[in-house]
View 1 (tube, rainbow, N blue to C red):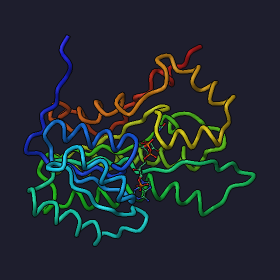
View 2: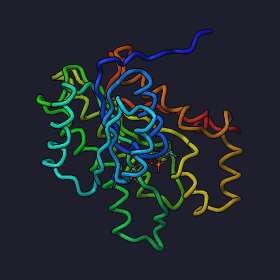
View 3: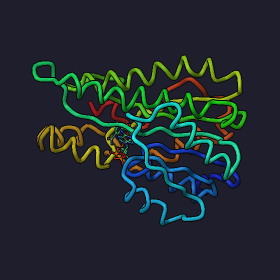
View 4: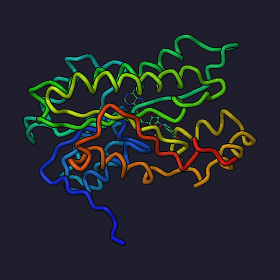
Length: 256
Ligand SMILES: NC(=O)c1ccc[n+]([C@@H]2O[C@H](COP(=O)([O-])OP(=O)(O)OC[C@H]3O[C@@H](n4cnc5c(N)ncnc54)[C@H](OP(=O)(O)O)[C@@H]3O)[C@@H](O)[C@H]2O)c1
């Protein structure tokens, strides 16, 4: 059986959250398939590490999505369009997680979780979808989580943020189709990245073992999620919009 290969020669994409984990993997896979990629995150050093693999195809931009206003996005996207032409799609993976149990939660932290996953995403899509930036029929993929679909104990802010992403996608799809753009969310299960390493420390070894044992196909790696994102960005997914795709090693189906 042959592997699926994507061809994105002469296509331009923006990936937010490209310095680490799944965003990093998606950036590398897009460049591998021939696309020009604007890789966005805060940590410039880590972005430059990503760029090193495909210096002719990957450009980097350090930006904090919590601070970026519409004018900042406009400046960054105009520059990319000036260099390569209009943009064919975007991926938003920026996110943070953490415990927000009711008995001890800190309002500012809960807001930061929502702002990073949800409002940061809406400002990104607002900028990307402008006619001067977007090629007709663009595709956007934004990151939710299986935490949007079941109750993660002590993490209402994260679950709420990701639930908001899934719901917003249904509404945004109805606005964006006017220019034949599509938007979908991805809900990964537990994927081994910096984020899940941090969660391991927070929730303790016993709970981590329970989680690992509950995955029929084992927990994931960034390369288990990236192919679905590339598929959604491609024209092969031209009939898919306004929905959430779960990529979770069977975790929502459950072991028992
Ligand atoms: N790993 C999992 O098990 C899992 C499961 C379900 C869903 N998800 C979701 O999948 C997405 C990717 O997660 P991951 O595991 O790949 O996480 P990760 O390795 O921690 O990467 C997160 C990325 O977001 C960027 N980011 C965070 N805050 C930002 C800000 N204020 N401005 C700009 N960039 C920011 C980080 O870059 P800088 O630090 O350089 O800014 C980094 O590139 C997230 O939305 C996460 O919630 C993860």
